[in-house]
Image (cartoon, rainbow, N blue to C red):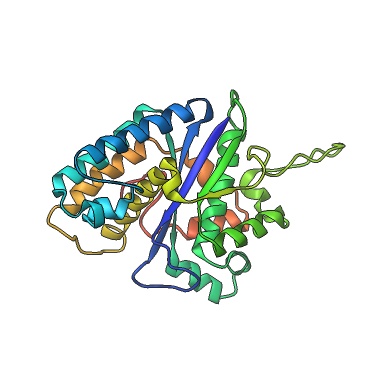
Length: 288
């Protein structure tokens, strides 16, 4: 059995915000059998941080990176070392990452142009959340020695939580091309479309889940990398891109297969997701 914890960075809501041109949904996939040991070890990391004067209730990526709140007196080099330590730790624990970046302006342009799927989804949040769930289904349904299904836990997002659950509870036949779901002609019982996912997604407050905090760090780094490269945002300090690239490359080494996120099928949903990738970036090539 597995668990996938998800969070996003670059949230723009239900209309385009030029200050948030890309939204990134990121997930951390862990083996359930080692989950409690993983959480215990991550709590030990947080205890070590407290020893150096950082009383944390939440390991928030933007605060660490920008030196805000509890991190305001921690030198930049130290904060960078802590982020590196956390990512290296996740690699040693065998964590896998799933990442879905959505070009927000392109999403809303398609919505305005009458794209049925974009209008049904409502915002970049819903389509990226659905994308990650479908990718998990593809990733695990194709594993010959997959030892159990996956529990999916998102960081709480109130209204988005409700709309995502509604989408998942309605007709998902438009996702069949993406997942490759078929029903045998003589089947007495129809196989579920999301047979690798346990029940419906759950939602948790990030400060209660160290694993969601790790997903937040992954989403933030990928978002920042895309802002600095694809979207041409200026560095906030000299050499920032080089620093971010180091973190970004570590994340890339742990990402799941490209075919799970962007299959070769030509259905409407798959084609839309490919069109919503940031221009000049691809999950397969990873680096811009």
